[in-house]
Length: 159
Image 1 (cartoon, rainbow, N blue to C red):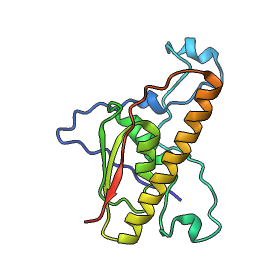
Image 2 (image 1 turned 180 degrees about the horizontal axis):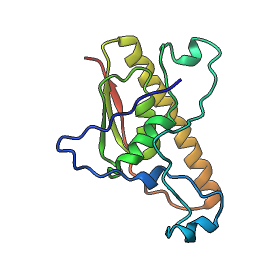
Image 3 (image 1 turned 60 degrees about the vertical axis):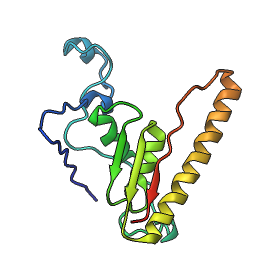
Image 4 (image 1 turned 90 degrees about the vertical axis):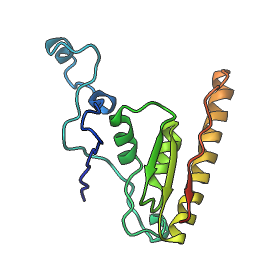
């Protein structure tokens, strides 16, 4: 029901962008009252992240401990690293972190000792790419804009 998150750095001086995952003020008067420049405040140290209820083992991507993609998305955004940076997941499992990389335009690399997890994660990433491509095509058709986004290619490797 909960996860501990450790933000480890080599020198301990990497800033975090707490407003990147901030929340809106309920009382908009607080924006001016607390001298904020935008309608966003720090989320705090405890996050509630909604998740989909899993009805079967297949819904868990055949992994005993999946977590919502929003968790690594928030961690990546919190880190403040530039879009296109490399995110390493040494315990890729079902691939949630690499799915988050796809959504955020990051490069992702993961590995796992279980070949079934590697295969599952690769299938999940491929499905996410297909979904993003479909969403992008719908967005382009309705907006009529040119999408010049860089295509990233996270891939899970089998050790």
